[in-house]
Image (tube, rainbow, N blue to C red; front, top):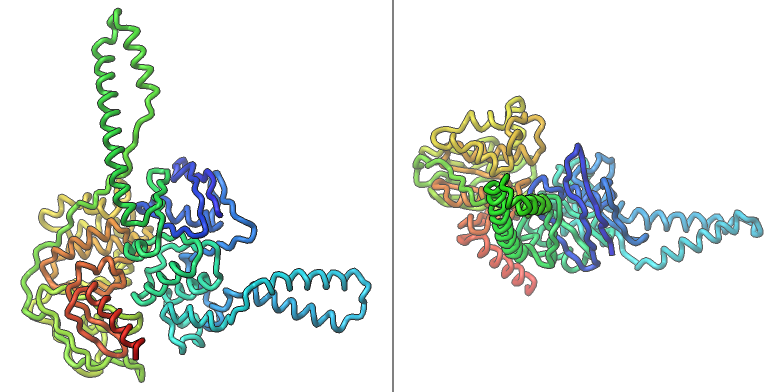
Length: 544
């Protein structure tokens, strides 16, 4: 059992949280929830031993292994994917190496009576006891199994880690963590760089093979599938629910109703007594009663109501200009880089008003297809036609980097907001967690997640009738995602979504284009239907 004991974090006179105490048991799968800035990542780092609390401590058994998925990227080592991932077993392999070296010394040395010789015997006995207590493992096979589960192909194993993007290198770090078989796995947004197949594999691993897990994630489906406990960080304290995320939402709603009722009753009590004090202050016959009530009011501990979720705020796209009947028509498209074929004979027809999803493993051509539609790349053969009067709004994965670094948050939005929406700029920014003095911050000082949110607001306010969004939900918390999802659902134009976030796509995309095996396959069903269909397909494949 790992316990968090009276942990507090303070900086610059501000208390992030205090008196946080809870235990993590071997079978716990914990979702760490709360709004951005509440202290979730800070708490995770403290449990991981990466940060020190202002007060309190973490206690764990001496032999306990706590593994943490860092948010920084793997260093550019000159080693292959297989070599880097095998570092997960470095301790065991180093132990084996030392045993072999000592045994070699013992065979050639003749100073049998010396203290040095006896120390070698003691050391090899100690190491051997530890080493042979570890279950015999085919390390290479284990590494291979985990890497393939996370989306790597066999030919990737011998490639240098430096050849891979940040997302893929994050997967290598995740693979190393899973292979260590830790007592507690700490994951901060693990699904951001995973495709659907890899997410489903990770879910299965965490449920069936991992011990204790604590995760921060804005992927609602992922959190709901793997967790059995939810800890909410809010207003400097925690609430611990023995329930998975969807059930926790119901319990939290009930809690806030009770809080509000108690708060309202206390406010009425305070107002009634204050009215009595104001009325009879200075009245000789009531002096004692007035003083008594003043003292009573001074002793009252104010009841606080947790942050009210304002996700009910509706964000609407401006009405779009009507486009032609078919905004996007792709015919017999072939794209390759040298001898590497991305896809061939790809055909896509998207009608006005349709909301479609591009899904498939990473590297199968989803982003390439979008670049072809945007005319950003040359194609080998076939054609891409953009329909009459199609006005494209495009959100790329690197959209955040395209913002004006010298402008403030407010200026970025003020420059593009037109009409009635101008009166709502501060409310819109507030819904995306830019509040108070935050709106005057320069773009250059914002984090990656904050820039992503700002780029998304910018897009939401631009008058377009064909929206193309490439992984728009990364870095967005659940409340913000819900606001965007509702806005996209009501959008009267055409929508193309590339995303691995099942919860975000569910109920939004009405048709799915699957990318894989150098082909593009059209599925005339929503995401739920598509996933059910895929499960049936895989069962058929097993039966063959």
